[in-house]
Image 1 (cartoon, rainbow over the protein chains, first blue to last red):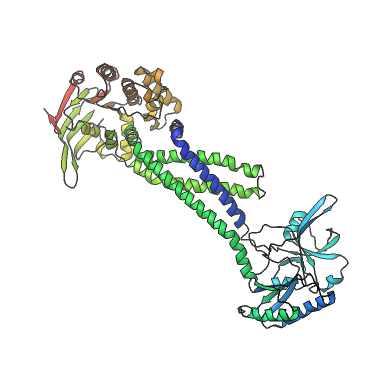
Image 2: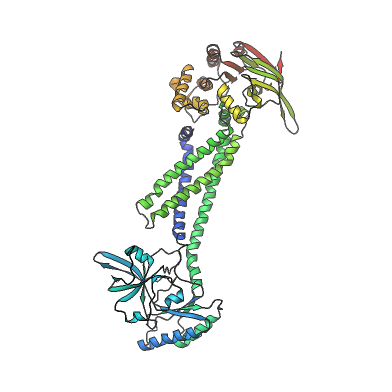
Length: 389
Length: 222
């Protein structure tokens, strides 16, 4: 029967070509959208490696460099002590200007006799781990002993280890990374641009909070701290820094804003794809309905020649399924070029999964659309249908 | 071979009741060529549809090859039609998107355990018997009316049915082509022993068959 259906499809290739093109294009659009969605949502389950709830960030004025280094350090000591003394502040930490969701990135690579290591750099103080709830999986975070360490201490994420030193115990190892650096700790991650960010090699360097590069203050505030507390913090920072050019931001709000930038286009694209699928479904439904009405005498004839009702329904469903499979196969041929030729630099499995889901969605739509008209076709009375012609 | 006992067919709507067949009794022995005549709307096609299991009688019993077929379930009816009956229609009912050979193959497609090779062989044989083997790769729209009806006959006989039901097989043909088709049917009946029931408007064609049954307003004229 399959061969018979293929003959029918081939002999009506002119009529079928438009439907094949429609399904083929729908497959490609779905493939592109699903690849984008899968790429972005794949890491939703992977923690970013830090907390955003009840965390406030104070961005200090970067232009305020007219103080000498002693005054600068003293200002930061005062900031830390005074902020820490506030009732609602549980922890205070400092880092260089690479703040979460700020889209600032500093990365570099070092080549040691052909072994190249690339990483993002971050500078943070001793309190950073506790304040941001960083998960140290091996070794430790920076402490007082690192101020006078022989080798500059670094803390890297697990991805860094997986990329460059897989299956090796690297704690206390010295690595040539812009000079000899000692890995003192491994954290699970610190994806500071959010859940949608790709896993990347990340490396923390120690920076005392008294450093003039410690431009961001991280506050862990108590749960249910009112928004009005921001004014208290603001007044304190202003009185210590003698400047009003600073910004206080709620990290959770920053995270929401950041995530929205990915969610909105993703939902928009999914909605467009949804409408496209509905369009395809309606088109298919219409084509099938038209076909069945046009082929009533053929249905009557087939029934007279021995086709059962199930046989008629299967034939019409089979015809549209084979057409769809053909269109999807052509689609897969083009889609598979993306990972094979590495046209886009994202993991190939995303494309393969997207191809699978696109084909599944299209085939499901086709089956759903084919079932009712096919069932109607099977109910056509042969005597009536044969007499109509 | 075919036995109809008190068969009636009534079409009912909410307001109208139309009697298409009224107490028809009919016995067609194996190997007979029966023709049915009557004016339009007298129930000839309805009778043929009931014999061909394409329609159900409202009342009465239909026995074909010793089996009370009106009690069959839908699937069994399809199977029975496929195995025992061959159909020829006035308007040929060839599928325009299939080549002649594929049209002829159709009944075998619904028969289990017939390989593609066997289907091909039987279809070529059937086409040869109606003199159209050389046209097997043509499409129906490339054939004349007579040729189309010969293809339809090949399709009707390809499964070697015991009974052929022909609904005005020469109705759409000129007299020359009509006679050609009639000759083939007579030959099938004579040589193959196939039982044939033919509905016709043509008195001359009817006279060439073994027996003529006349219908008027759904009733048999004695």
